[in-house]
Image (cartoon, rainbow, N blue to C red; front, side):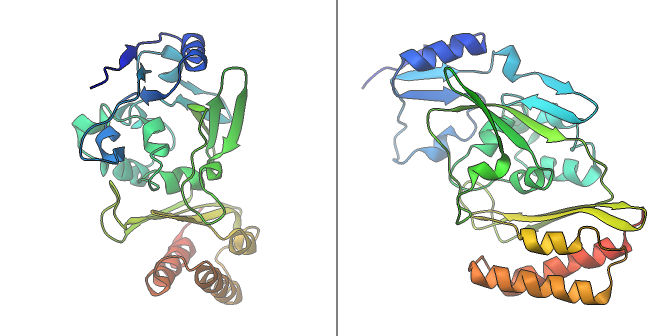
Length: 277
């Protein structure tokens, strides 16, 4: 049996140098999903293992007037009292992940980069337009969270890049709808979450997003644009048009159970109608 060499880099610079030098590297932070990504009944390790949990840059949380940014190695427990998890429903969603002991270890980076499916927080962060910062040896790039979904809505992870930070624009939340659908979410069940976020400004809907994510991810940009800038409460004709658009796009993409999802989307719009500024 081969014995892996374990590295404990203390800075991003040291980590990048190691990644440039070493071949076939396994990145480990919390490691709570490591056993589930194994393809055989026996644990298999790469020749080199990088433990990144001691890198300060990956554990820091920064907040400005417009954005909050947290390192990919921040544990889920560390995010409990920061935006957007300050919101009651978002915090409840966070609390559905494992146990307190698991959340004390599991990292947000590992959660988003699971690879086999979209886990519990992905749809929520997609509704908040989260941006992901990736680092390679000589390049830093920032991409929208939808970069981790391909054209068919399937999870995709580009090799050779390390997720370092997650940035979320600060915005007011007048309406947040979260509904679990299907069965188990982790490790590879058929369940997922439907999440919708809306902002109402002077009786006008200034922001609206609806995302469904589980084995696949879904969002209808055209339906969202039909709602944005519409008056609040929504006129009946816009409600009908939007429901028709969602029905058509769900069937066109063959996404999940249309008969299950359409009533939930209707609930989202009805809840939005009851929202107040």
